[in-house]
Length: 399
Image (cartoon, rainbow, N blue to C red; front, side, top):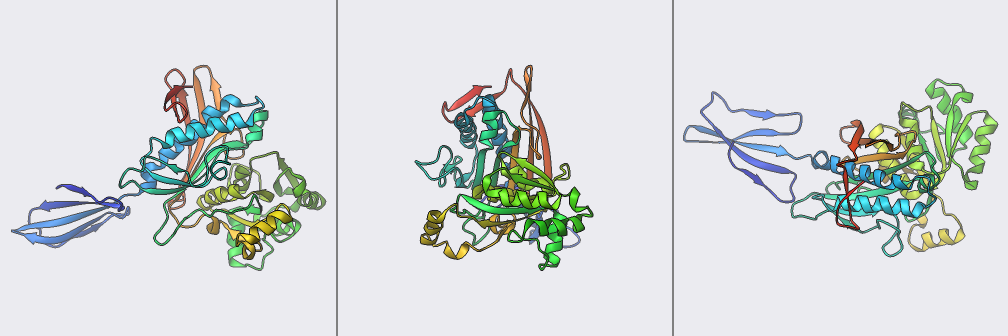
């Protein structure tokens, strides 16, 4: 193979190949998208151009996974200590430290608020080295989904990141919703496919949850009483809780952490069939990215907490979006999206951090929309040698 020439900002490399005369002209293609193209015949030698497509998500995905691993490990020190702000800061510090090492041009599009008001990673924050030619990523994250759970030593907390390379003509693949809450409904792939075939089915965030349960039971081959609905335990969700109980279905209530809850119906290892209720708007985008990898579905609708927020949304130009039902692909568009998460405490998606002696064990998931590959990663970290790079110290720090 001849010299390799990299083109900054492009998704491929070029190389020239020369070989002796052949009986015919050949064009090779591979499933990966690589091409071997005959481009000329020079003095009896056939000259080929080798076009090798770089899958930039695949190259960098493990670095994002290391970021959530480090966040989970660092924040786990605050498990049950009653200080959710400290747990969140520990996770942010570890994620920022890892981002400082990553050759990406990243920007936080969904984080923990706006600059000077956010406790941690803020919207618009630049992350990565921003080296010339490095891939651009829009990043949505929640350093700790379930800070209250961590502070109280309760289950259902994770650290998660969704990262997307915007496609041509796309400003941002991950939709920022300028509201605190959304009313959400998520369901497994069987239900999603049935609704696609017959949109008249009452599978809607606007439909009574009792109707959603009945049609889901038929599609899943279950009795109504065997359908399990997961709901965030909040006064604003009391009307859903009452309907589920009146129908005789099972109810699983959670204190915090509705990213994993929304993804639970699409995970074969859980007995959760539906997730319903009003939860965080940023979390809806993160769960949408994960659900697109898993094949499940989600609907979400902006839910102003009060009249003042509603009027502010209208003033900001979002009045015509208040009745819109966002599907997963509306919130997480395109196919160049990856999702990764690491458990801090046990959840329907992942086990939490477990430390025994000189070893810390983390459980993570890494998924990509493009390939629909779902990887569960169990990592064993030797605490005698394990270090985490922190932004606050700008150096590797022992666990």
